[in-house]
Image 1 (tube, rainbow, N blue to C red):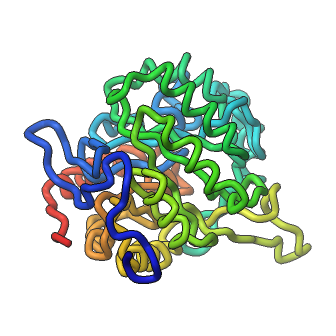
Image 2 (image 1 turned 180 degrees about the horizontal axis):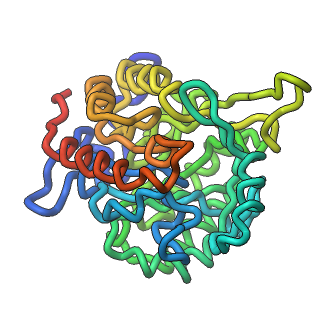
Length: 349
């Protein structure tokens, strides 16, 4: 046992390999039994389902998707998928016409707000549902490495999601499935179900499982549960629960009242969580996320103990006023970032 009682040697799928290592030329890198093309992946929701239904203005996907080959990332993490389609607090549509843009922007104002150093969102797991994703989207993303994000409100729902992925996706065809048992935008206390989710759903998966941790929950305890139940890696961290009010009326700016804070503002928190996980003796591979914009941000996470890094809101919202107009420049910046991460060797632990 490690400090604070955490298990130093995890059990289960791929748990004996703690550090990221090369697996051969052209094959990428390995985190336990998770194989990535490189150490820079994308966070859930940034690129929707990995493919769009509209060729130019690709609703639901970052503008950089037109200028950066998605196959160049270590893996693309999907929007969180549920058993049934959900509008959440937004919409599950991704086929908006230009004539409908004012209506779409009006919807955004109720689920997304800029704040100093970041963004607060409350999309609420809006998604087409696991069946539609596996039927209509996944077959068009076979050139990418994919992490399928799954979300549910019971162990039974996670078992259903895992079974559906198993039936549609051969083992090895995706990098992993990620269990989102930590979202603040769906008004549910995941502490009630996390142990049963891991105990029942992880053993059923034909694919490596990643557990996404929240800094607002007992992330050290959840990491211990992850190791106990055979989870292959951790994502640290999910967004931080946050609030913005209209200064004139005191009313919440978001439809859900509370939302998830992302961006540079949470980077010191995410770094702390990664470091505390390592200090506590957690040996599972860690994919770190929160406020990553530059190669220096990535290196900080590697020094703190991460094995890979995940790019989130910075790729979409780096130029909030310019949007698509500056996307080509953002694309060039991200291409360079991918090359820098590929050349970097994380410190040995």
